[in-house]
Length: 315
Image (tube, rainbow, N blue to C red; front, side):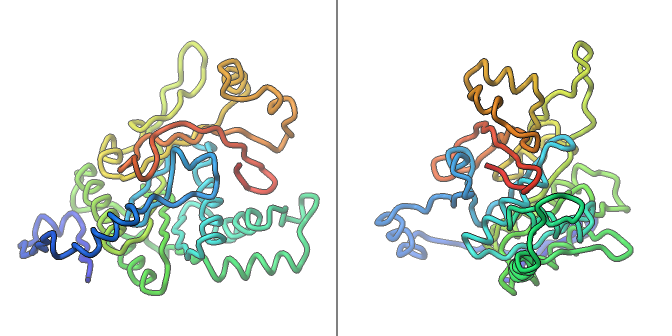
């Protein structure tokens, strides 16, 4: 089925002739009987076992990842996509206009190998390992770059649809607020609403996973502590529209030493983990704040993950 995408200004001018599909129970009875017999399929594991209770992948869903700078939102997606490619054979399209593509490929290769790939750091991987990583990434990943102008959401989704016919089934926009916004209409709220609706419809219609990163609004520094407050579902630029539209939302938060010690006091972390941690290990909080169909895909919750700066891996 062909999926039509419109920019916001076009919607206002469009003479709507859209028809809706009518479905009776008997039209899908065989599928329903299959679900009744075998159970409705659960969301897929992320392959980070401790996340399974609070986060799962599901084809047809729109995902949002957010968090303040240096919180690990891009890094966790890199690792999660490597895991999907390794374990599920997925093919991933990455549109990351704020990141140099060579650096992004290097980071993915580092995560794939679990080893350093840069001559400036110790324990560099072998030539054979390096080329093995490049072969793997070439088979499972494609990277989109801008020409002179940023694309509209319509252009971006058309590109995604073309790649979906070639076997790509995971699509990442990092970040969404880098996508070109309408110049003829200043109502960004409505443009964002339409953009998210189009991405969600693309994911659902084509049965793919669609993920975007969204930066939070500039935070207000806490007067007493001088610290940046923890980001939340409602910190995102664009307001509550993100929370309303997405199927699953994740907020990343980097824990500082004071927060780590507080988590130990509350029993959320073992003290021996902090005592034995290496300088290259950082701790982040992975918080799922919205999950659609929780019985199948996990319930909202917070998990502490260790991030290894050398390997680019989370556990």
